[in-house]
Length: 83
Image (tube, rainbow, N blue to C red; front, side, top):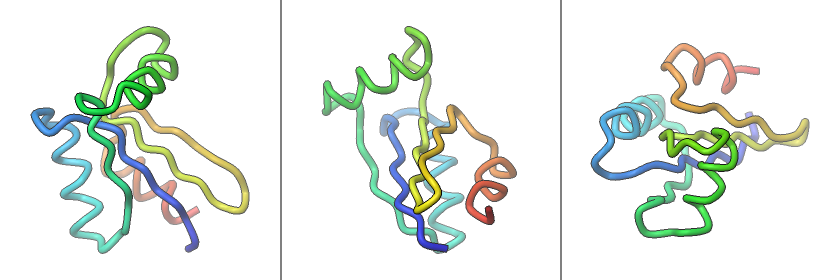
């Protein structure tokens, strides 16, 4: 598995914290971007979510391309990481 993973979220969001805990417990390395502190990242999240500020947005890039998951469940994350 050779993925580059970025989690866009906020420190106060329970879903963001749950996603990060899940990735941490699975030993998955990822970059975390707090959209409260990064205006460009916030715009990316809003654009992807058609005008809504829904977090976390998880971006998984690999040699096959890029996939974005908005507020994914643990099962959705695991499925994409295994692919």
